Image (tube, rainbow, N blue to C red; front, side):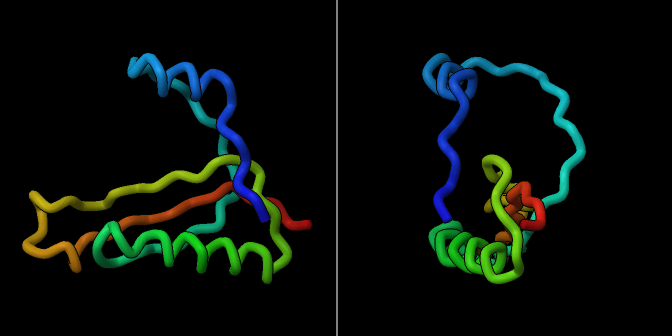
Length: 91
């Protein structure tokens, strides 16, 4: 399973650094909540990709990381909570 390439409009914004508002449609997502340092998110990402594949789903778009707190809110990196979401559909 290979993550999808970013669409052209996303790449343009990455280059320009501008901000915008958009409405996103409702979608089914597979998600996993990672607790700990951001350096460990890669392992959680791989775990979620395996789960998606092993449970008969396929990726339908790029993922989203939701940072539920930050180092200003918690005393230690081990208390950071990051939610990883990927849009999916059943094969």
